[in-house]
Length: 540
Image (cartoon, rainbow, N blue to C red; front, side):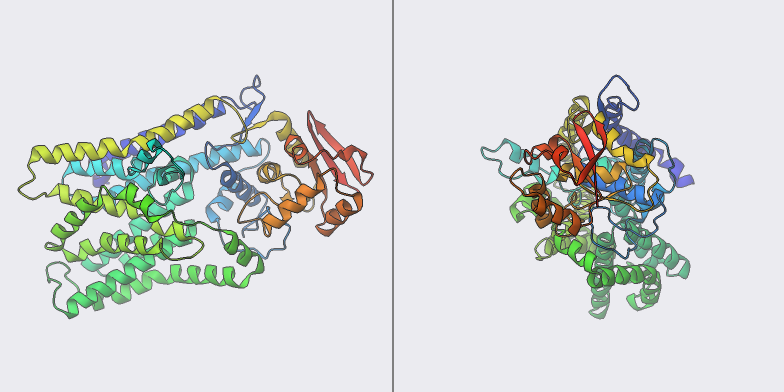
């Protein structure tokens, strides 16, 4: 408690930062017809990443409907369920009708704010392990949580053919997680606390500290298994490195009062719950037919190495200097961020589907070593120049964040799809909420409509989400065929029966796929019409 009072400024900063990230959402809610009847728009709940955002709300909705295991509503493929996305399933259980969607997005952003504050607090704890000066801690915390690299300079190149990492990769920095992806923010907080609990074991090996380590690590795997696996890799290689240093008698006794062999049983015990859940997750994703398809479709390639160099390169010399100066004082602590960065750089070179995820936390480790150098600079770097360098790092790290924030405010002030949805479309989707449905019906619609539907209604769709829609590319072509005017009715009926489609949506995005008129189809019956949006039931 005393520590929290002394560091009240961290809480103040965290609350102010999360309040700032919430401003665009507050502006967008003022444009929502559910709160402002004078408008014709409904806010999706997301300023960026709307496709994934809708899937988070859909997951929360399945939790509200009683699910404890995750089953995606974005596929017609049968599923056995898996322990995944637990934070969203559990949050959904706090909601009940009416105005379910509005309550879900408010609850989502409450979770985002809380996860963001915890992430800022955990980041401060981690940085404090390497930085003693209070001012340096404060500035490093701002850069680690609200800053980014120099990738934004690529926007001013003559031919910017790729979007800089700062604008789409939450793993590469961190602000995007605080801005809109709460499970990643909470997962990073849990990972940082896991690593700190592991370091604490070297000072005080006890089963109490093992339990603390296990709890944080388990929270990490619940939020994001990849982050927990990263933690396992960092801890394993750190322990191996320390054991080798001891074996070669290069680890000074004052660095760690206990040997690597002495702390081994404690971190092994602490890792057992996480290892069990990671093994379960890996087994299910390997053995389950649907989850295998999901894994194959979940393609997150890393950017070219030059993009990472453009973002991180300006800090690497300072980080190397910081690691070098710390190495002579305490190899034990220095190894942790160094190994973290090495694992991240190697990870983005490994040709696997989730390649981009493996850079997770690199930015925090880079900032820790950079400011460790500035915290205790060499004699030739005077205080005047050190302050100038620190101020320069702060100034050049913020433009990308300011651009993201300004873009978010502008998006919130000018309602348009997909961030906002027409009121008539939402009314059509919410018709399902008024029906006594025993099972979730399967609805056929365009990709855009299919992505939104499960966030508003207890339905399943054929397509709508890249990784979660099994065989989505082929199915999207088949769905588009249904709306083509050249498609014969027999072919259309065959597809509807093959996938046991119960309802069909016909709106502007569906009409854009073709000029077919479903009102003339004898196998469809109009059940509701809202402006340009119509919903048909498939007649068996």
